[in-house]
Length: 279
Image 1: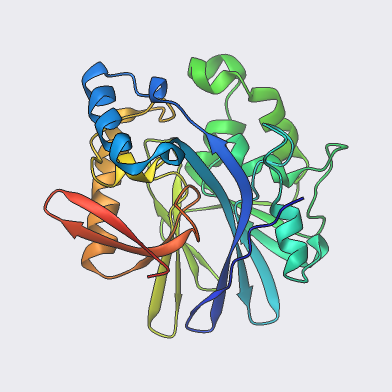
Image 2 (image 1 turned 90 degrees about the horizontal axis):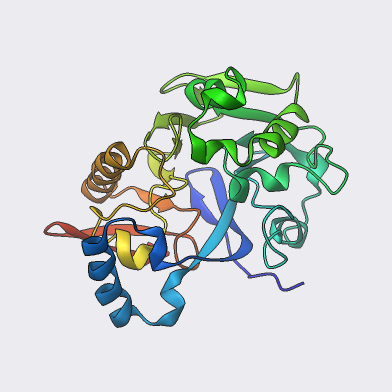
């Protein structure tokens, strides 16, 4: 299995290393608005054919003598091309049993599939799973019929993955921090979609989950909505707010679907943004 090699980035005393889980193809058909689809098509024509394929990343955090993850990749829930995060973790010399915390940006298959192994058991047997209280409530405190139609399709596997961490699932509030990593709500993609702000030694990095999907579309044209977002209007407002924040304050970002290496800086030009790999 191919593993995309990535070096770590120090944020103060915390090392953040991208773990590539594989490629995830998308389509212009995922953009519901025909005018926005036409706009995206022009942007992609300039970017090249690979721009419609998203990377999927999780991130390894070295917190002194402890290890944590931000998201866990897709596992084998989606395609044979995904599920490489475990190999990437092994390449760092870290066994799954050494992970003691997993910060989840949200509960979608390309982020939680790696939480379970082929037998449906916890792939990280000693890890505490950390979710924003709104995201946990959305998936765990309501029944299938209470969810929007789009969210119902993967209800069973979602419940299976989360239940494998029963007794080790921690719900956190806005701004609540664990070992220098704090929760910052970024709703729209899901109700409890969360950015995790990593702070140490006067430095900062924001791991933002699915704030954007296709960088060649959402950075130059953040107003374009895709069907991945449960509430497109809220997601667009959140996207603009967070992009403004990280560009203004020079906060590095770690994005689940950013171009390689998944970590870098966001630069603003007028109403558009660009990704500077590595920062």
